[in-house]
Amino acid sequence: MSLAYKHAPGEAPDPDGAHRCIRWALQDEGMGKTPKEMVYAILDSFRGVKSELVMLFCSPQFHIAEVAAAVGDYGLDATVVGCTTAGEITPLGHRRGSIIGVSFDAEHFAASVKPIERLAEFDIAAGFATARAMMAEQELVQQRLETPHTFAMLINDSLAMREEAIVSAFGAALGHVPLVGGSAGVSPAVREPNMFLDGRVLENAALMLLVSTDHDFRVFQTQHFKPLDLKVVVTKADPANRLVLEINAEPAAKEYARLLGVRRDELTPQVFAAHPLVVRAGGRHYARAIQQVNDDDSFHFFCAIDEGIVLSIAESGNLVADLESLFTRLNQDLGPVEAVLGFDCILRYIEMEQGQMLQDISRLLTANTVIGFNTYGEQFGTMHMSQTFTGIAFGSALAG
Image (cartoon, rainbow, N blue to C red):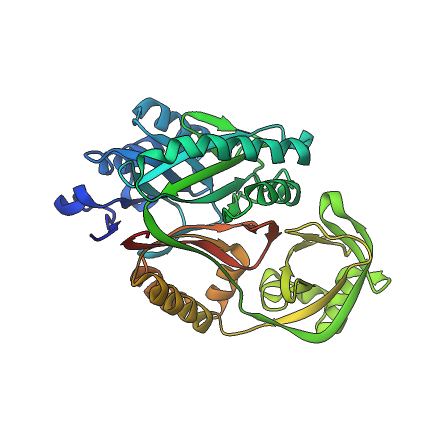
C-alpha cells in the first residue's frame, strides 16, 4: 500500500487517495483565497477517509486566530493542531505564504494531544508527571492498532523560550519513546500567538503529541557542520533571555567577528548560518546558533547559553550531500520512505538560499514526500538544538 497522498494546489483529490493513510494538501497566497477558504480547501481534501490527526503549518502572514477560527467553524471530526512557520516545507519544495496540511488516518494512527500552557510557570517535575500520565492514556488509545509503535512530537512557542526545560522533562519521562519537534516560526515584526489546538488559539504554550502507528517509522536528526580549531569561552551571559554579552572577556560580536576575520558590520544571518557556534556533548557537537546581533554587541541565540561554557566555531559542510545520505539511509531502513514529517532550522534555509541549493533540495523533498516547516529551534530526545533537521520518516510496510 502506498502511504503518501499527493495533493497539489488546484488539483482535484486523487480518487485513489481513499486508501492512503498519510495525505497532504497545499494552499498558497497566489491562489487568491482568504485564510478561511484555504483552510476549508485543505480540510475538504481530507474528507472521505476518517482522520485521526491533522496538522497545519501556516505562514505567519496569516493571523493564527483566523486559521484557528476556520478550523473550529469547519468542524472536522479529528484533532487539528497547527502553528506558524519560518517557511513551509512541502513535497513541491520550500514555500513562503502558504499553508501545508497533513492528515494521519484513523485506521493506522492513534494520537493523544495535550496543550502545555502558562510556560512561564512550567515546572520540570510537573512536566515529567504530565508526560507519564499521557503515556498511560496512550496505552489505552493505541489498543485498536494491531502492532502499535509510538513516537512523541513537541510544537513549542519560540517566544516563550522554555524549550530546554520542556524537552528535558518530557524526553526523560518518555523513556524508550522517541521525541522530535520544532519551535514555531514567527514574524520578526509581530509578536503574536503562534499555535492552536482545534479552534482555540494558544499563547505562551506548547503542544505535546503522542502518536502510535502500525506502520514502520524512524526518527532522525542530521547536521552538516564541522568544528574548527577556534574555541571561545562564554564569559558573560543572560541564559534566561538567551543572550551572550561577552566571549573571551570581549564584546561577543566583536570577538566573533575578529576570530572569523570579518568586520563587525559584516555579521549577518548568512554568516551565522555558515559559522555556527557548537558545543560538544555526548561525543557529538551540537549547534548553538546565533539568531541576531544586538546594538550592544551581544548575541541573541536560538538556545540558552550559560556562562563558562566552551564553544567552538564551526564551518558548514555539504548540506545537499548530507541530506542525500540521510534519505539514502532512511530508504534502506524503511524500504522505501513513503512520507517524512520534518522540522528544519531557518538558518539551514538561509544557507540553502544563499548557496543556490534550493533546486537540489526541492528534488529531495519531492522524492521523499517531505512535509513540515522551518523552525526557530528543533527538539530531539532530551535536547533543544538549532541548525539541524529532525523528523519522522514513515515506511509503507506494517511494523513487525
